[in-house]
Image (cartoon, rainbow, N blue to C red; front, top):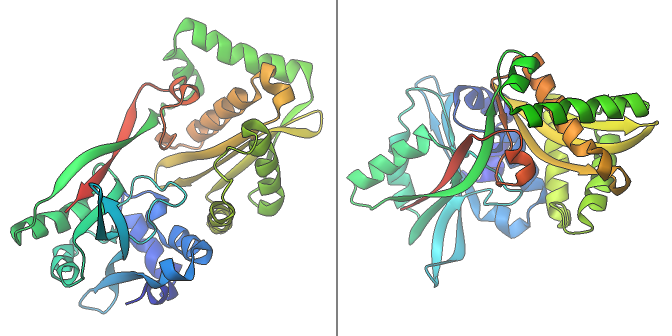
Length: 327
């Protein structure tokens, strides 16, 4: 069926499958695909379809959204089979949704019937059991599969307390984290403001502070990406999974933080800060406070998503890789 028809099944069909697909990040779910379809070109949406596997009771057991696109691969122009959402908005840890025990390998024959020369699935989670099952089935049908590492995603295993986490840092790093937060709250009227119930207002602060931080070179310079992310943020807010917060100094937002939660993980997506507060490390203080919040709420992982930026590595030395799978 078309991706449009698959989305019309509604989040009430997709979301339970996302809950059962522990390896997949929220980018694999209905909310991200809905936001992508609403911000993509008509041609991109029209090139997308979804294979749906129904169980004996007629209820969907798996949903595989894909698209056929012309792309360059090894310097050649080819017809490629890809994830429907592609790489727009930098979705990491992708796998398609499936209930445990669903016979997803049956999708292999349906994929073979499409007119592609190469299948390229990027940003694949590690592990991604559902796409792995299809690849195994395609190998059994005579195809070759190649996997290669793609993006490093720094990830922090969260302990049971903030003090335990601080104790895992070097003495210098631990003292710096404590000193910066203490000084900020001592010298200014500092508060956190959450915008899960006022998404547009909080988004405006994020955009302004992100623009100030990156001076037009940030992650939202393409209006379609901002539209995608804002629509996704609204969907996450409806699920009570949006983390959109500002650190306010003397009544004004000085730093903003945007992320979301799923399963046992909090994902950090983007942030921003006012240049005049750079010396006070407002971005680092806010990051630390969000990590502490994740610990206090019982999450097990804090995922910084793709990119080995120094400010991410300051918080963790561990990581999770995404992969590119080519058939």
